[in-house]
Every structure is written in structure tokens, then in C-alpha cells.
Length: 385
Ligand SMILES: *Cc1c(COP(=O)(O)O)cnc(C)c1O
Image 1 (cartoon, rainbow, N blue to C red):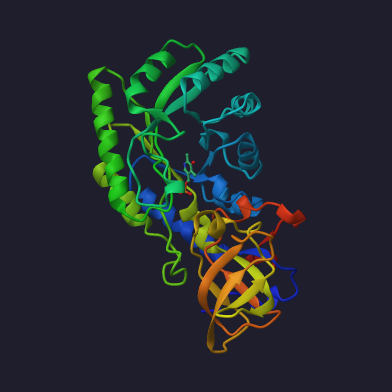
Image 2: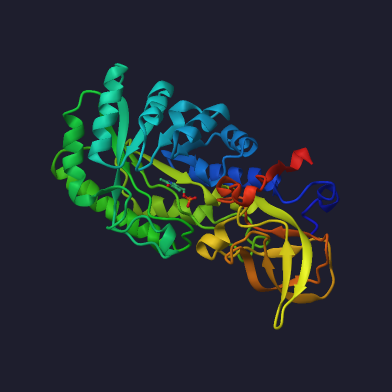
């Protein structure tokens, strides 16, 4: 399955770089639109932190998705890429004043508020502008997701969100404030979730919370269930598009929406992971005593997921059909954790071969840094090559 890469067009490019298959991205967006569109009142936002490359943001905004931002910089990037401000939601435990002011100036759809002190600051800053900020409370639903501990966000003791016990107190506090308007509840239980039972558990929790609020005559316009749908890192060729049908159907089936209530989603990884690959070149083959290393010119500064969470990415040698050999694929950075994969089979590789590290479109380029005074990797879309 190397035919899907325009290898001839890679040869004159300086490596490492990210390559984004825009045909796949567009197909993915079309699937999201079709599957979400089967349900009334479903509204999908793209989680910008997964990949903020302006060229991708532009394609995603044109497909009609809203944006989910976690910083002022992301709000600015979303607006620059053409996302309508009234489709932008803004979450984050530590919103600084300039970021809140930017959200107010742009008239974004909603601030997802994570504490009462934050609510007070939003109210105060909105008052100075004589505005009213739409807010939702991010509630910590104490639903565990079956995923890596570092990307679970919905458990009780977690820096994110407001505990369920404090939910009504927070809603009452908002009701006392003149410059915020309570419009909904927000949740996000984690990332790379493939077990629909986890989302079902979230639905059940939300159903209970809604019932509890209704006994106190509190109604909610919007429910936002965050993101978290995972992708198949083992089989990027066989499963290039995640099962959006099962995902949206799970919510349609298990979440009891009230008449007129809108359901919002914030998908990041599922939108962009599979369309992106990190393209790197083999620099050296180094023979160890019991293994051999393929030393490549990309490192953890370009793609940190393997070093940060032992994430698996499929690796392919695009330049060779030679018989497979086993390699540890490592980067040039001065850290022992700068390893992309241990003991993987690759077509026999030589200096200069093009290597693709697959499923790298999400949390790849957006997490790149300049450690070791390295250059940031470029990101190219199909049309630019
Ligand atoms: C990161 C994040 C998302 C997106 O998560 P994915 O797993 O990439 O879908 C959605 N909502 C919030 C609040 C987030 O922090």
C-alpha cells in the first residue's frame, strides 16, 4: 500500500515534514457530515488542538464544522481560517484575561467554564465591555475511559471541570451574575476511546444529571459531550475513516435529549489523525549487539507521542520492497526516549530511504517543538506537492 504516497514528489523535499492527504481528510469530513446529519440538532466542532495547521483548518472550516478551542491563540487561528465565531466554543482550566477578552470581542458561541473563580472573572470582564457571555459548565462526570492514564480526563480527581456535587451551586452562582448566561453542560472524558460503552456510560450519567436538574426546574439548552473518538493506529490503510456511524448512533440511542436541545461534539483526533504522516529519511543503520537501529532524521521534537505516551505508530519504508528486517527506529535527539518504535519490521532500509510514520495527523505537528535548536517540521498538503 505504498501507492497512496506520491513518493516522487517527496524526493526533492527536505525531511522531516508532515504530509497531509487532503482527499482522505475531505472524505472523513463528508462522512462526519453525513452521519451527524442523520440526527436532528447534532452540531460538530473540530478540536483545533489536534492540528492547527492553517491549510487543514481552512479545509475543515469550509466543511461547515465549528471549532473547539483551548487557548486565545487557537481562537485567533480558528477565526483566521474562516470558522464562524458563533460556532466557536472555548474550554480550558486556565483562561487568562486576554484570552477571555478575545473570546468576548469575537462574540464566540460559548465559554466552557471549569471553576467558579473563572466564572467570576468572565462576568467581570464581560461587564467592562457591557456584554453578556454565554457559558456552559464543564462537569466532571467521573466516567473512566479505557485509554492511556495520561489522556483520561473524566475521573473524579482531575484538574479538569467542576465536580457533579458542585454543579447546582455553580448554576445558581451564574444566575446571580448579570454578565454571564448559563446555556449548557459540557463534558469530555478522554481521548483515543474505541469502546462505545464508555460513551454510553457518559450518556447515562448525563441523563441522571438532567433529571436531577429538572427536579429543581433548571433547564439546559445545550449539551456538549466533548470528543475522544479513537482511530485505528494499527491499521491506517484498512480503517482510514473511524466509525462515525457507531459513534453518533451511540449518542442518539442513549442520550435523552429534551425537545429543542442541541447536542455538541468536539472531535479532534478522529478528524485528522489518519490523513497525516510524518515523512523522514533514514540517516544511518547502526548495528548493535542484539539489534539494529534505523536512525532517522525526525525526532521526538517533531512527533512526541511515542515518547510521551508510548503511542504506537505504524512505520513504513516507502523506498524499498526489499525483504523485511527488524529495527528499532530512533531519532537524533539527545534523549533515550527519542524512539519511534522498537523491534518493528521494515523493508530493508538504507541511508536516504523515505520512511512514513503513519496516523500522525493528530497531536503531531501541533505538539512539535524546537528542542535541540531543531527546525519545526513543515506541513504539506497534497495540492502543494
Ligand atoms: C482535546 C479535547 C477534545 C478533543 O479530543 P479528541 O480526543 O482529539 O477528540 C475535545 N474537547 C476538549 C475539551 C478537549 O480538551
